Amino acid sequence: MPQKKGAPVRAPKFKSSAPKSGSKSPKHRGYRAEDAAAGTASAPKKARWSSDDRVARGRNAERPRGGESAARGERTGERPNWEPRPKQSRFERDAQRTGRVDRDARPARGDRDERPRYNRDDRPARGDRDERPRYNRDERPARHDRDERPRYNRDDRPARGDRDERPRYNRDERPAREDRPRREFGNDRPRRDFRDDRPARAPRQDEAARFVPTDDVVLERLEAQAIVAGDSEGVSFGDLGLGDNIVRALAELGAASPFPIQAGTIPEVLAGRDVLGRGRTGSGKTIAFGAPLVERLLRMQAGDSKRRQPGRKPRALILAPTRELALQIDRTVQPIARSVGLFTTQIYGGVPYARQLGALDRGVDIVIGTPGRIQDLSAQGRLDLSQVVVTVLDEADHMCELGFAEPVQDILDRTSEGGQKLLFSATLDKGVAEIVERYLVEPSVHEVAGEDQASSTIDHRVLVMDQRDKLAVLAELASGPGKKLVFARTRAFAEQLADFLDEADIAADAIHGDLNQSRRQRALEKFSRGRLQALVATDVAARGIHVDDVDLVIQADAPDEYKSYLHRSGRTGRAGKSGVVVTLVPRNRRRKVEDLLSRAEITAEWIQVRPGDDVIRDLAEGVAIS
DNA sequence: AAAAAAC
Image 1 (cartoon, rainbow, N blue to C red):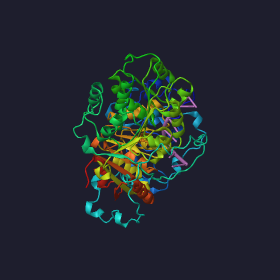
Image 2 (image 1 turned 30 degrees about the vertical axis):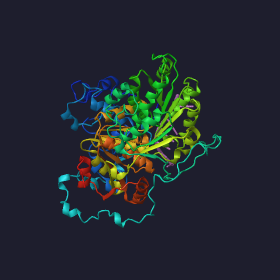
Image 3 (image 1 turned 180 degrees about the horizontal axis):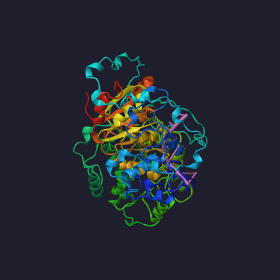
Image 4 (image 1 turned 90 degrees about the vertical axis):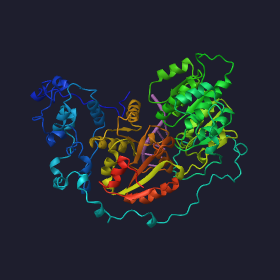
């Protein structure tokens, strides 16, 4: 198998020259066993590197030392002051930092500032790189422009009064935008009957084939029965129809009594109806479909043997748009299922088949996974979906978008005809209409009444800044205590930002689709456990992912789609907790972001900032600002 | 045009 793009690549060892004295002794702080064995390239003095040395080792000759990046050189505008390092650098640095590699050879903490930060620096040159043209340090503009400006010192900032002259962004001076009527839930419109106008099944061979660029349009919401929060007051999971074991399992998961969306949909699911559920991010949708799904399977098998029968075919299927989300759903559903003797398994890509096939052979009741691998196994005849009588689409609107719709429909076609279908999302809209018309029968549609921004626990800020100040502002925002989730629009930029933050001594890692599954999971797990200050993500982490106590969501790039804004934001402020979302916007993108927020029906405070401003520090430190 | 999702 070819090397995965994101996997660390070992540099070939250099053979010729003899080890230098400086690295020979195990007591020397530069000592590395493998260097002694393999030999070290000519590094005359260990203390400092010449630019040639650095160039010879394939590194950016002007790469800064850690910690200075944010403050240096941004305003020259002539070239980026910071450039990405090779991908494995953060990984290796992490190994060094955590001591998993070379623990004993690692210098005492105090020594580290005096020498290059990475073991990489001690590695031999790679001869094959020498021929490639390299950036020449001597051709750079003189350093003086950078050296004159010291690293930004908070205490040297002008007193507050001096800064008042800078205009604060004034909402009222913004260009008027067309008055779009607020979307209504349409309680007075006739309820749509999805069945009667269902068209004959259309051929769909070409649907995914052609690329149709779509605007970020706000689709009509579906008619829904409003769930009034107060109605579920004092109602227990047991009252809703769940059995004792399941209620106990829910309590152990921390769900003592039902959230509104759960109170609304659980009885409907138990009644066997097709259900569309819309509850905002962090409102408890997983339990809303997971718990009644288990209860239903249990009721349907009443009388059958409770024992796990080998080869038993799955009777329920839960589809999610990302592997991490599928895993997370399983972490909630599995204990509920196990409490009544049912088994779940995860079927998703990026991992070997063997384990998944083994689990299927042992017999499984609920399959949870992503479309690709499920379609794959199913087409191979190794996953029989014909007994699936309950299918859930989590993030259903997303699952109905281009690229997902086709495999999702293929999978739905393989499930038992007439099986129950449950569609859930925080942004459920008419985008699911085609699937609904094709596969659902008289769905009952639910949403929680009064879920608008006014009732939200999330606070939105837009920081308008010079494009070239972005990195500095990001570093300031990401410093400080607490978990910061940073979103970038592309994988490459996410990777760059993680490197950049790590360089700035902010423990950071990245998660995106270019990384192998184990690195994706490891990054997310480290972040969850509080071992990272910042996790930089693409939209792979925008939907559904729950991490306790993310206090700040930073959008280094504004998203393209309003739904993405809503889902990214929803990584904070979960289950009624408070949270802050900060979007970094270069001046020339203001209009675009205004439109985006308007589609998302979000009102944010707009603030003009420069690096070092109090606002930024306060946001980083979680100080509430009115 | 990007991201995600199979090998």
